Image (cartoon, rainbow, N blue to C red; front, side, top):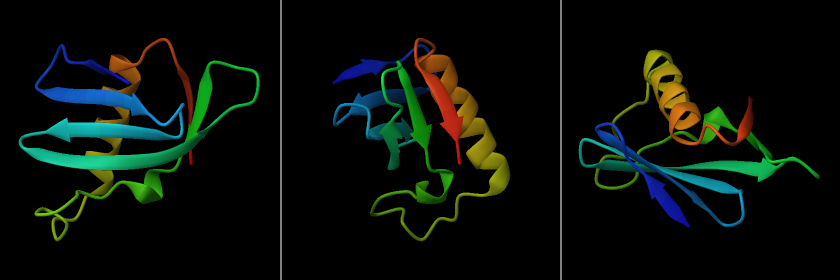
Length: 84
């Protein structure tokens, strides 16, 4: 596992490319996905983008999901993402 933090957010790959940990402004989420066979790539399920407690009641808007996707893609630029 590793952190990449060049911006006011942190991104970490966990569980052999099946989970992304994303943090910003004291909030944290785990985004589910799965490794793309034979590639340095990952299918990521945006429907799993939810803040963890104590922020679980804060809804992640579509605009926030787009921003978070861009942040993850930038922080983990060596990984090819397919967003679903």
